[in-house]
Image (cartoon, rainbow, N blue to C red; front, side, top):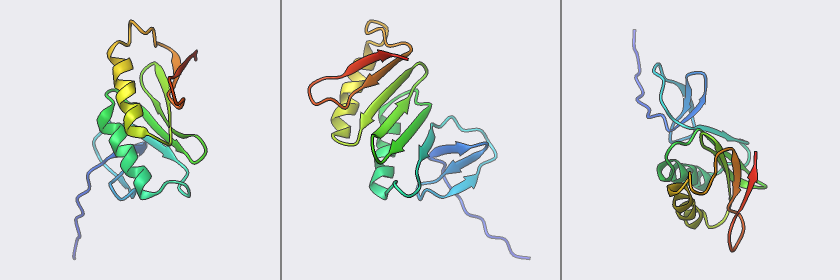
Amino acid sequence: MEYEVTLRQPEFKFKNGLYYDKNLEIFFHPTIKQLPTLIFDASSLQSNNFNEALLIKTSIYGLKQIEYSKVSGWTIYLNSLVVKLGKNELEERLIKLNVILSDFEKNNLKNKILDLRYQNGFSVTQI
């Protein structure tokens, strides 16, 4: 009898104990990892998009879910905040988001949708 063991590092949650690795392959992991869920249309996500998802994951604390849409780009979900990042200028928008989040309570962002896709600012609406 012969066995092959493959070690994989989970990067994102898929669902119910299933995770994505760095190659976007789904695998089972026996322990529960506190990783954000990644949601995307398999036909629209490319490898550079996956690198962007990794950048978002490492840049923002408290992520619950990351979504990618070919039309609207990246949307992220935190505990009580939805953030629309879009597709362009991702690094700049993540820096802006961290500045906004650093004063979360003062900015009264609980249960809000924050849209950073604007060229010269952002919008905030109630969920």
